[in-house]
Image (cartoon, rainbow, N blue to C red; front, side, top):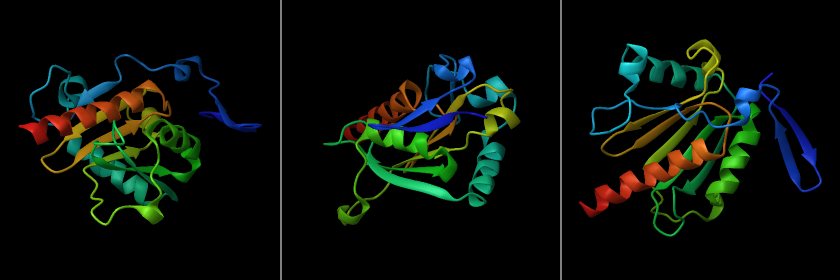
Length: 175
């Protein structure tokens, strides 16, 4: 049991029975690319290349009923077009992130909407690959910024990741 999700008068409430899940782990972020960074790399912390886990994540997501939503990462006015891909049974995480990010209506997306960032949510991997710890893996590609959320904490970890994605994207635009 990761969380109890309850309908309340003004929306939903997610309660985490495990105290560790009630906060952002300050050591939860790793980088899975070769671009310059002052953060720890996935391969340094775990001793193998992220490509293997990335493929396992995609394979697992293919077996799930999915929830998707679109948003502008960081700033609605000028952030990159982004998409979240999450298992439907983690819908409360997607909703929390959508509320933090100002979800965009897919029926009124501009014709030129082109995702430059994707957040993939795969919470069970914290148990199968990370000894119960929450991790967010950033993979910054030339055309797509991927963030793999192996957790269910939509607050600062997801928000910070989205803001980091927006900052990286903005620095590429300005040279």
